[in-house]
Image (cartoon, rainbow, N blue to C red):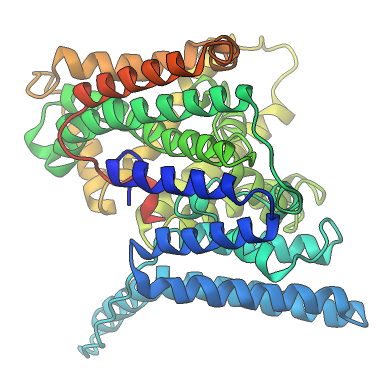
Length: 468
């Protein structure tokens, strides 16, 4: 069930009416939201609702055990069991098939010529997001940052349908306090939410989908048959596509949650305006980058154990962040590229000669953007060979244009130009819309949805981050 579809619109209309009809009883409201969230998840594959249920119950039980433990050692042991259990779920579904594939290749390389059983593991949608959410909850309970949640609240935290399948990774400290009280809804919140949903719909249905269908997918499918210009614009196009695709999901998730009375944290902040890779990760997928910082980089030692250990921690954090995206060497290279460049930036900041002039910000923006685009090639390509094949064909120097059209070029430029909009654009527009009469808001919203529907290509592709 995709956000930008009529089916989801009807589903959400029912959920919206039901949620506010039950607002007099917060417990029944949460029970209803939990049930519709399981229905939403089950629409993808009903078999994995049981996994979501079992994960919620297991993490609730461990959280209760941690706060009731009679000794720090017992609490630590329970936390270890919980973290290992969540990572075990993630490892089985995301990496078991990849592990057996690599093991089979090693066996054949050693000349043993023994066929291992073929293991096909179906990946549950959103498993990376709800397991990371569970891990952060258990760690925060152990450290006393949040109190242990009741079973209903924790199940809803992990299953709440707006963020369930592609984030943001909403932490317990952000959402559990909201679940404990009956929500309210203001005209300002409605106006801001509707604009976010509409903006996300435009970015996904028009920009990301058009670029994917007519530029990015053809370029990456057979780079050897494309000109260098096609591949260069295709790489830029994928940078725009993945930003518009993923930020669109986050915008719509934030807007949908707001219409139900809940606030999600911002997940993107004009990332391609970043003047360094460190700045990029403060702006891109903020919920994941802050999770990696707080639950991986800092526990590894952060920057507290000397320069060499800091560089290693940066590299390992991003390497594991790449592996989080999936069982592929392309993701590992992508993470290693980001980790290596973050380490180089940190080294240069510490050791840059004092007499050297500081480069203008625009130089940092251009360099950072192209490091990110290079990484996206490995992220998007189906395997390492395809990624290097893409880069080799790009470097071939054939600049004949066979794919790029004025429309596609306009979408790439326009997708990047979005980053030049003032940050306050949507809030300022929402402040104006909130003063409109409700019928005027409805007519404008309907008209704009029709415009987006007219502009979009046929069909609606799943969001890129559904595979993670």
